Image 1 (tube, rainbow, N blue to C red):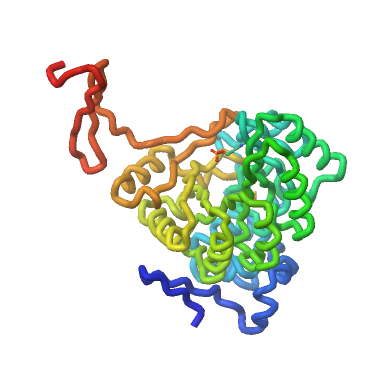
Image 2: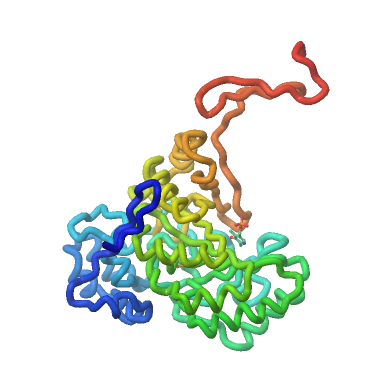
Amino acid sequence: MCVIHTPMRIEFEPAPRPQDISPQDWMDWRWQVRNRLKRFEDFSMHFALTESEIGGLREANQAFKVQATPYYASLAEPGNIHDPIRRMMIPLAEELSDGKQAMSDPLAERKYSPAPRIVHRYPDRVLFLVTDTCSVYCRYCLRKHFTGHDEAFPVRTEYQAALDYIKNQSGIREVILSGGDPLTLGDERIEEILKDLSQIPHLDLIRIGTRMPVVNPMRITNELVSRLKIYHPIFIMTHFNHAKEVTYEAAKALLRLVDNGFPVLNQMVLLRGINDSAEAVEQLSRRLLRLRVKPYYMHQCDPSLGTDHFRTSIRQSLKIQRELWGKISGLALPQLSVDLPGGGGKVGLVPDFLIEKTDSHWRFRGWDGVESTYIEPGYDHNF
Ligand SMILES: *Cc1c(COP(=O)(O)O)cnc(C)c1O
Ligand code: SF4
């Protein structure tokens, strides 16, 4: 049996491979890419589609590409129209109606792009969008203005201009390879980027943002990992949203990364009807922690085009954060964050523990409801 037994008795089940596909093909990441589901017919073979999904698949494709690996599609229960995997992968007709705050570029990334493929919003770190391609197009994607337009790797002059920008800005300490999904590129290409970046003396580390461990975990081959680890420190930022996504194959990919010295952190997005409960966040976090993956951010869904039906209210997100705070390990608790529309950057939100404050004292109600006072230095109890 392909089950990783961990001391906490969490079991990681393999994805249900269709009978007519050989294990060799199924476990080959390029096979998964070649056999992606894209058209209405590809999905209707596996799922009894609803009216809304039929409308979504027929129309939404033109606005934002539809695509999924057979591996990822196999994780959705065919008969359940509310399955979280299905909801993230198959568009609904709702996607076509513009929301109240629908923005094609909610984080104003074009405005903060001083060079091709670069987003420079914070003093010490930049995003480098090395490809616009992903294995699965998440219906709630925040970067619909860029992702999935078949631009792939930048042309030579653009690539060089991006690299020169990073070279010339000595305040940049971190480059975050993003996209699209950088690991959709071939091994040689990725190695070339890392080699070029490794020659820039002011860089401390590189991050790679990827959803491959979620949607095509076969991509994390021994070959890839041995090529990448030469350029450490490299932090891998994954994007698991639901406990169901943490399969045996995903677990193997994650362990391969952490065993080879890559710190792995997860960024989830809170999505209505998919993972918007304290239980769903806790389950996901516990599974990831078993694999030494740290839950890093819990993002408020950005008001990108066609995402109104996915968005939770900030109130609801804070309620989830409040329910988990103190109850579960700090290691398991991701930081709730809102990326400010218009490009203001991320702001962290924490539950409101403060009851009142004066110059001399701060009065709190803790996670379990108990009230306490912190007296500022230099003041005594009889303030
Ligand atoms: C999110 C983001 C980062 C990384 O932020 P951290 O808080 O360091 O994880 C960097 N640049 C941009 C433009 C971002 O949106
Ligand atoms: S992996 Fe990221 S960039 Fe790609 S579709 Fe999903 S959210 Fe968008």
